Image (cartoon, rainbow, N blue to C red):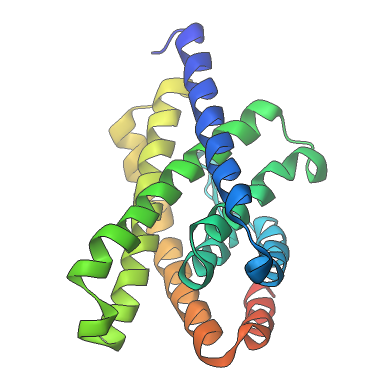
Length: 214
């Protein structure tokens, strides 16, 4: 069991990770992707309200789906902004506590960085779309988002273990059992949404995203 001081240190670290990640995203936005950023940000903010609760274990939302579409279609800056800003809006829309928001944002930021690394540094070389065509296209995107879900579950399990004394393996098992189907379905939805955006344009992608949210 962590001491209260150690737990506060962990919260501070997660807050720092979230703040740095969001700062990198905001600094990297340009006028060329501002329209796409605004559209995706609206979709992600609405998607953040649609939760699949896993009891005390947390929740799945559509926000990461939209965030990864931002990565695949617009790059790292768009990815971080779309993925993290809706979490911080919880402070105003849901009146969540600062500690809860910072911890959630930090855990998501860690997952985002791992997903980004898989997409850019690993999957793009091993399963390059240039070499494998549509198979490579689907696998690079699916692997990056599945990496995010995996890392997020690991961090959530560790957080439950440290904050509430729940066995890490038990919390991880319950998270996996309760969330694996949702993670797979949301991954399929993200890959499909990204494909629509690339092939048919962002307006059609936005309409598809609205249908997905509904």
